[in-house]
Length: 374
Ligand code: SF4
Image (tube, rainbow, N blue to C red; front, side, top):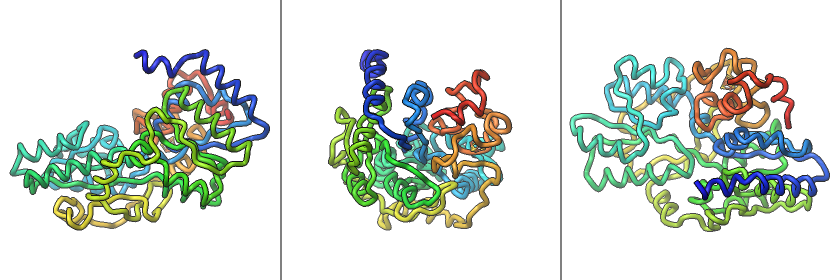
């Protein structure tokens, strides 16, 4: 725990807050892209510690939250057709048009919660008479492991394993937000774990193209505050640059082995993001030479779009236009026990973060007080 406690040191937190305060001369609107960062920011009360001039808005960086209903419907349909449908735990509770995967499981479908795609390969190996599909959800962080699972299945000659790919990529989503007239963002905190795989070069190009500063940072309170400090300095000095404030983990070139694996297995495709729409080049699907492992091809899945639920404000939450307590359903009709949308389900969802850590679960704060907080 020593390694963690060092990055939560209260004295250093106060010192960084003082430095941020000293550099601020005007208001800035900062978006953290990653849901893991959102959770820790809210969990550690950082928005309320920062100077009033800084408004933190929360971005679309939760892969479960941005997975469209259509894909959940496809996964449910596959499970109900008799395949062994495997995925990470959060995906099981996200509502589809008709039902969630958990409800499909309750109805008798073989839906399994796994911690690694390689477990799905093992299930396929041990059950040669069953089709096994891994519902592969995630950003650049999880895609290499999912690609590796496909490579393992191919090497073993497993013909009963396939991937339902819902991978999404962060930089195209940031680009989409920057060209959306409803979004107002002065600077980005970029996700350190994504950059551990992909490096920083795409962010450098994005910063230059859109004249906006981007700081790559981590997840602990000191990482987040150091990232905010670096971003405030860039903003105050008018420097539209990408900076790596997570040097203990992230290298500019990323992880070359993981990037090579991604290039070998996946191709960039246009992808629909829940509540945001289709973003060009923002997804990863299997390359044509791996199509034998593509569940969409293998099971001829219906590409029809499904209707998004009308009441859920996930789109506005994911674009940073609304904060979770500003959704009329927040904490009343929509809770982690009975979620109406993915941001309340996922462990990285902004709505769940506010519900668990901003006092709503204990009734300590009102919706209005959090909505008006910086
Ligand atoms: S509180 Fe619930 S209904 Fe409202 S945006 Fe969040 S997930 Fe959707």
